[in-house]
Image 1 (tube, rainbow, N blue to C red):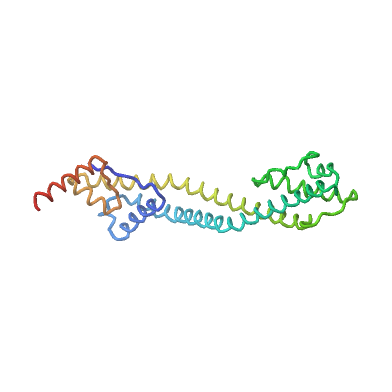
Image 2: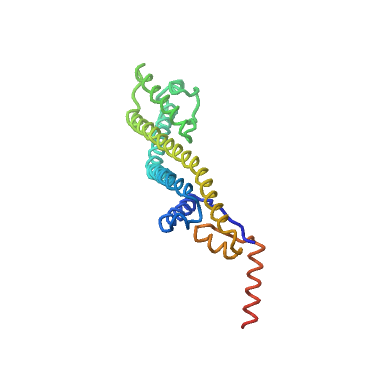
Length: 244
């Protein structure tokens, strides 16, 4: 026997609720296969659930639309920080600066490696250290570094910081919207189950096939198990052979 399967996506949940609401408009209450209370519950719940899903979709789209620009800003910030330190190391290698100057930037003396800049947190930390370190070095009489200048490095770093905070804000909005939908999803499943239970209970006087056919008009979905589906296919094939 096929079994009833509750919706497992938000689109399917909305479709099931909409099916009940549409029948509630077209069929008189005394002929409706589920109660007036359930209909009223669906009418109250539906706009909240639909609105929450739309808000979640908008939030995800906003975050996605911004992610490409954010990725480029992040990449450039890493690039300028890395290039700046490379210029410092080249100046030390040429003997134009003493090896100790690298300590201004939070690195160990004689260290020729650039710090890790793969993660956002790395860029936040090292960007601040490098900018402050260059300012301190120049204040102590050091010649400013150009190509890139610390001013240009700072421009790209501050652009990254602003973009990072904005991206985090979008993520938080999406997370809150996702949590709201998750809460309403549980209510949706409960309401759909209650409606479908009432429909099936009102059709108990019918045969199994008639009951499933009538219930499907209310959006109830029945599926066959794999073994049952295979049996039906075999029987259908046998019949086609007999009548061919």
